[in-house]
Length: 184
Image 1: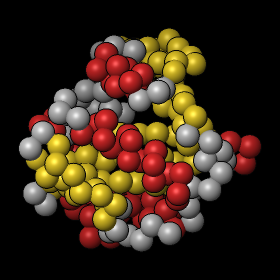
Image 2: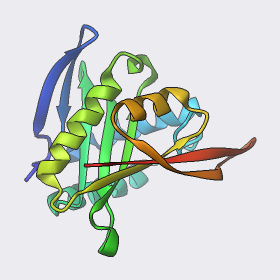
Image 3: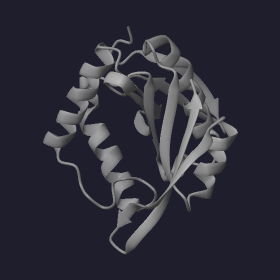
């Protein structure tokens, strides 16, 4: 079982040292800061300027820690110089979709485009095989206009299986979404 705060890997990427580990209860405030900073960018994330309260983040973290303990979720944090700068996760579905994991990834702007995303995807897939019994397929949704992410996912073996017109609703209108999958 993946214990809270367990170090999964250490690696140097683009001359920056990173520690990759599971979350723990002490990550509450750093995780809140991480998501709120990403939300302010208003880029390709689900968060578009909203600010998560400490109570909301506590509920999210408690939920994730419980799912991790039950082998229903896997979360890996990328830490650089004591700061959370990236996060990736796979959450298993339920019932007839219990073999399908929903993938997510987020990286601070200062740490993008240097190979951290590639490393995180490889690491979460590797660990998911150990930590998520029955995991067979991984799926994701990405903004159709996010060319960097589309290229990264294709490079990592994801294939397009669908296209959802108006799959993302923003303040200034709709964006299309590309649905992708790959075998675990």
